[in-house]
Length: 408
Image 1 (cartoon, rainbow, N blue to C red):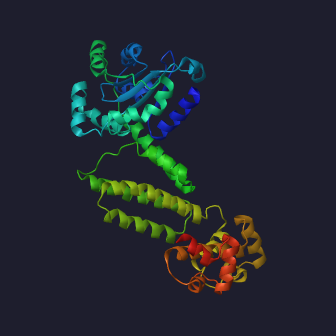
Image 2 (image 1 turned 135 degrees about the vertical axis):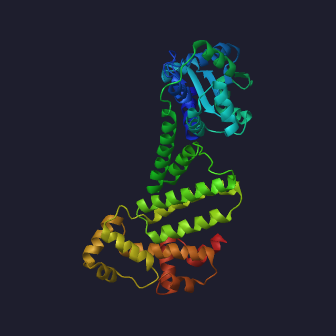
């Protein structure tokens, strides 16, 4: 049970962009504590200086929350002995997280306290941009409670320690030298951010909504430095770029430009007309879902050029008189070849596909207008309302009239 809980919560936190680090008894992978940030800044940095005080304090409490000299916050505990062998680990460290975005003033203070040269500032900023930001320390604790209570009970015996000054003092004693080329950290942070974004866009290209949303949350854990002092403008600028990237992903999925342009324009207008930051931030998920739906419903990337043209013809002229013969003539191929190839690539007959496209539009009109059944049949390319009703009942199990009553 405990092993399953660790595995589940590890996946949950990592989906939020929060590290769940399992440390073996030899502390071999302790440099991953801060994504190897200190090891890129200093020559031969000893990470055990950070953990020694924490392990010493562990005797007073099974769970410790601690803050280090970079204002990074962690949760530390020793794994229950019954699962240490299974995970090949003795300790768990969750984090780092910060409790608010790091301002320029914060950066200046950290730079001064650590006696960093000005050349480190960009590196430092990029590092903080990859650290998840939580509202408060209490929020951090409440986030971890579903994991900590089953492991250690509900007596809330969780201690907080600030080891920042101890680390600073020990660094003075050991005198760590700055590395000659510390820019690796900023390069790596930027590379990781783009990698996360590319993974999210790949999910959009495949029309995988759930995966795209999950990867979006990981991508957004990388904070992007504000371009202007105006937060509203910064959020709008992000969404404009986001809309452009989603548009390109849809294009890669071989969606017809007509559909991409309609959706892209809709969101461009909504972005500029919305002046509430929280509404804009929630809009990003809506955008992601809508583009994924667009790809799922309209992508032709797995079809041959002939079938792509056939599908586009049907989708754009669904309300006109379309037959197998007319489509074959348009494509300059024989009806028999088109029929066989269409069924082979889409697993549908042309007649079924035409009917399904028409029904999509009919359902939209039934949901959003008060047009009569006869008017909807005509607008969607059905020759008469009786035929429309028969097809609708066959495909949906209800007549159009019954469907409309059902949704009211």
